Image (cartoon, one colour):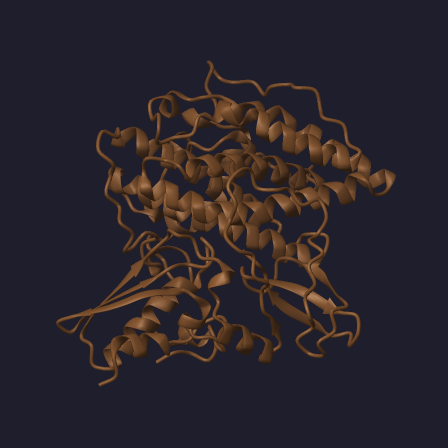
Length: 163
Length: 294
């Protein structure tokens, strides 16, 4: 029988199925005691409707793998950050045509800086690799993605925005 | 089993349905919810209602713009912001409900107007209906998110671990909301004569409701160490608004104050005329068909 960690790590994200929940950094902990499995996940955004699906998918996969007692716990703190998306996850996103987020580093104390112009960070086009891209909208088809366009190949693409 | 796309799960006839109400699992399932020693739980519950209702009611207002914003991207942006706030509301109402013995759905759908504790800024009608304007909605979003961001920034240090965690998570979302509103304010204020005029009018529309945001309520005063005293946020929020208005070439409206009723306002459950209409729309389905899911 595969370990509970292996089973949980293979479960895919319902909105970004190219990634596993482990790639996304949403899977925080899997512990196993006397055949009982406790899985801890964290939501990406407060209102992300996929969180219930994630829990249900984890439960189904683990029960399917022979673990009869499964508990899914939600952890809010520390809050999820795109820095938790693994290197492998970043490669998978890019291969699927979705620009991965930049690394933002630990949050700094004090007031949150105000941005009066859209951030000028360079995001490479996942189709052609050009850095000549711009943001169309920072809110995309899901809470975690912004919409951009590439001026070199003229294709629009999604970008997992930094948070 | 996992799904190749998110919508297959809707057809499976099992687990949660993505709709309102009873299909969702509880918003705080699995979170450690111990109450810190010495905290007045009744007051904490009311405080969670205040912050939760601000988010719920403003989320409802923002959702009204879906399909009616000036451009498709803005439909999606305002809906995304509404969704973040709805998520914050669900967690806060669930926390309140642990003391009050009611779940998030009962609190959202089955309370009457006088039981809602949101500030008036969240409920007033800035469109898309008659008399409203996109610029007024942006003005409200700018003020609301600047204020809530400053509030959540301090709430991270709350003695209640659940409030602190909700604040830590929500803070990042609110930073995006504030930037979005600030960039639109500059774009409109520093745009054409017409966009400038309407952005200024939008500010004038919401400004009478700013003062209430910084008025300390007895419940907040009774929760030292748990709640944030809103009066302490004023200078930080004023500084942010000043920076945005100055970049946009807009004038800070004169400080007028919307009338209170016998000294009471939203935090006491006393609301403006717009609130009843908002609740009628938000609660209608659940009240007509209790427990309905789809």
